[in-house]
Length: 107
Image (cartoon, rainbow, N blue to C red; front, side, top):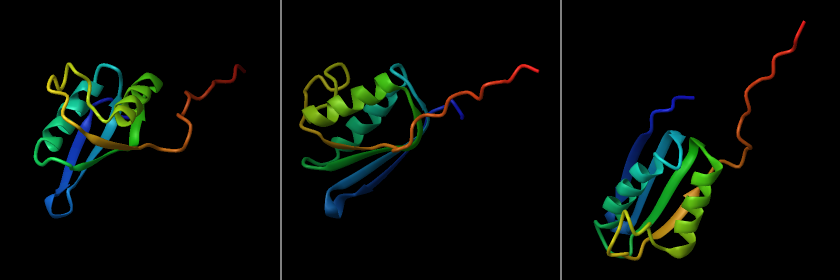
């Protein structure tokens, strides 16, 4: 898995929808980059439905909890958005369990 974060944004202003697609490794440190992109997308139009698609990313459990908290509160963290603009966020996460490193058998 590539640890570099790759983010693509798709916006449909006619239907007030935006999709932020992230690939790579999302940690509690790199999540701020995702939040900044989400804030910029959200600022394009009020009432925009924002989907964070992290289904192809490797997401640390703490970072996933942070994303779900933002989704439930309807706001991005105050350090990212001091104005606390309303933000309708849905998180599309992979349903599979994270992969663990393969164990090596001693011969």
